[in-house]
Each structure stands twice: as structure tokens, then as C-alpha cells.
Amino acid sequence: MTQHLQRRLTPRHITFMALGMAIGAGLFLGSADAIKLAGPSVLFAYLIGGVMIFIIMRALGEMTVHDPVAGSFSVYAQRYLGPFAGYVTGWNYWLLMVGVGMAEATAVGAYMHAWFPDWPRWIWVLGSVLTIGGLNLLTVKVYGEMEFWFTLVKVVTVLAMIAGGLSIIFFGLGNGGHPTGFSNLWSNGGWFPYGLTGMVMALPVVVFSFGGVETVGIAAGEAAQPERTIPRAVNSVLWRILIFYVGALLVIMSIYPWTGLGTQGSPFVTTFAKLGIPQAAGLINFVVITAALSGFNATTFSGSRMLYSLASKGQAPAVLNKVNSHGVPMRAILATLTVLLFAVLLNYLLPAKVFGMMMSILSFNTVWTWTMVLLAHYSFRRRMRSNGEAPAGFRLRWWPFTGIVCLAFLGFVVVMLGVSPDTRVALYVGAAWIALLTVAYKLCGIRQRMVLSEKLAPEAA
Image 1: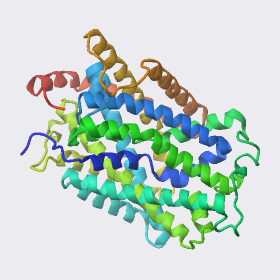
Image 2: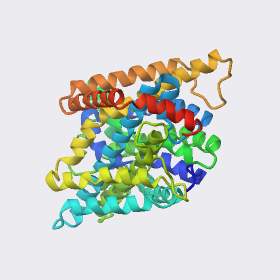
Image 3: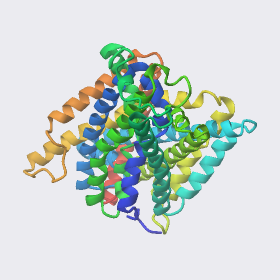
């Protein structure tokens, strides 16, 4: 058996992985909830959130180009913040990927149920776990190709909606030849109908729409040319958000009064229907299923690679630190899939509550991951400075100011999680999870195993 993961993800794969993780079901369906909270000012919320995510990705990208390893920010947290930080960050991210994977598989079941109402949802959840899991057991290039085609469907749909919407705005296509213009953006209470409070309340919803973009760092361990593909993928984050979120919602809220959005389902459905596409609901249902499968595909990949990395550092059972002849960590994938099957049981018992429940309790894990990226990067830069090393060509600009501002922003998001009764549970579950990991770290001698692992295989990722 080969000893390492293999670098078979091409620049095309990495670019579309980064693109795909920014376009999820949250854009097609969740955008209506954000609009209800903030009105047209949601555009500014997405822009602010996008800038913060770009800072996080630049920090991660700088460390990744310097050292592209499979464990990514878990390895960097261990290296620059200490063994315990790396251990907690790795397991925290694995739990996040498993939880998001359960939510995405649940979404597949919910949308398939719209087409096949007589079939129980858990069957579709089981089918998605077995299908995506089976494909992930093949070479990593298969994963890259799946993500490429999943993402292509989403990109084409959003661009088609934007192009069609602009034809309504400027030429009145589908509106009796009467251009709508942009007046709907300010004709229903102005840009800030709920004041700054509305925009602020929408920020947590907006930020978590971007969860998953850090997968690019995980993929770096299997990228063919990480020094070239990672900067390209990271630099595209901001313009992707501008086009696919700000651009799409700008078009939608120009065509329709924002006060009516969400009452008729997805804004994308209503826009395509206005363009004279009677199958709009079915089309968007297909695209959202694709988006959910894409998310499930990415979380299976990222979760298994993080578990493999944890095992290679002595933080998880050593049996998971194996790859087959194709460089695929089969045991880590199978272990992750076994836990993901729990989603089938949840959908059998609580089919209507699983998605919201999982997304609510995982907010803390997302903020923890991004915070560790910024803290590890701060320590990374300080170590380079103390060693007299010049910053890399690809680096986070205006450091440390940008990193400090972003950390303050994430702290504000945590406060907002505590303010809202709907998301407060995330803080309770997150604190309990960290406490459980701390106890395991102390009782299971994980630090000693980490030291032994480094002595036996110092090159392991």
C-alpha cells in the first residue's frame, strides 16, 4: 500500500471546488430569509461578510502555499498554537463536516420528496450516502470531476437567472415590454427599512452561507500544483460573492418588491417563471438537489481527509492512517460514512426537523474553525518575522490589522448567536463538545501519542 495521498486534483478541479462551496442551497432558498431580515440592505451584509471571508481565505491561503498538507488548518493550529489547539480544531472540523453532511443528505431527501411524496425521505438520504460515499472511495480525481460537474450546473443556473433578470430590468422581457428598472430597491422603505439593526441581524445568516470555502485548504494536500492553484482559488472568493450573491440578489430585488419575496418560494423560481419558463419550480428543485449533493460530496471528502490527518498525528486511531494503492484513505472515508448513516436514522425519526437542527447547532463549529485559521496565521507571521524570513509573495495584505478586524467580526457573530433564541443552542452544544474533547485529550494520553507520532513519522501530514 502507498504511504501518502496522491496529488491528482488539477487546477480546474480546485478552482471549481472553491466556486462550488460558495454556491449552495443557501443562495437558492436561504436568501429569502436574509432578505426578510434586512430588506435591500442585505446586499451590504453579503458584501461585508464576503470581505471577512476573503480575509480568512487569504490567511489560510498564505499558510497553505507555504506548506500544502492534508490536515490544513488543523496542522497549522498544532504547529503555531500548540498540540491541544490542533487536536481540538481537527476534531471540531470533522464533526462540522459530518453534521453538514447530514444536513445536506437531509436536503436531498426533502427535495426528492417533492417529486415522490409517497416515498419516505430516509430512502433518498440512504441513497445519497451510499452513492456519494461509493464514488469517494474511488480515486480523488473522481471526486474532483464530480465537484466540477455539480458546480457547473449551479453556475450556469445563477448566470442564466442574472442574464434573464437583466433583460427584464432593461428591456421588459416577460413584463409586457415594460422595463422594471431598479426602483424596487428603494421604493419600499428605502435601502435600510429596518435600519442598521436589520442588516446586523442578517449577518450571521449571511456568513454561514459561505461555510465550506475552507475546503480548498484541505484539498491542497492532493492538489497537483498547490503553489499556483490555491492563490487562484482564494483570490476568486471575493468576485464570486459579488457575482453570485450580490449580483443575483440585486437583480431579484430590482424585479420584485422585496416585501413579497419568500412568500412564493425561492426567488429563483419566481424569476424563471416570470421569464416564461413554466417548469421553473422543477428546474430549481433539480438545481438545489445538485447543490445539496455537491455539499455532501465536499463534506465527505473534507471530513475523511481531516480524520486521516488526525490519525497520522496520533490524534485518532492509527488504523485510520492508511491509504490504498490509489492514494485514497479508504478507512477514514468508511469511518466518516458510518457516522453519516446516522442521518438516515434521524430522517426516519424526525424527517421535518433534521436540517434546521443540524445547521443551528453547527454554527459554533464554523466560527471556531475560522478563528483558529486567523490565530494560527497571526502566530505564523510572528514566527516568520522572528526568524528573519520575508513574507511570502502570496500573503494577507495589511496584516495584522485585517486579521484583528476579522477576529472582532467573528466575535460579534458569536454574540449574535447568543442573542437569538434560535441559534443560542449552538453555544451550548459547542461548549459541551469542547469540554468532551478536553476530557478525552487528558484521559487518553493523546498528547503523548502525538509526540510519538512526530518522532516516528515527522513528515506525516
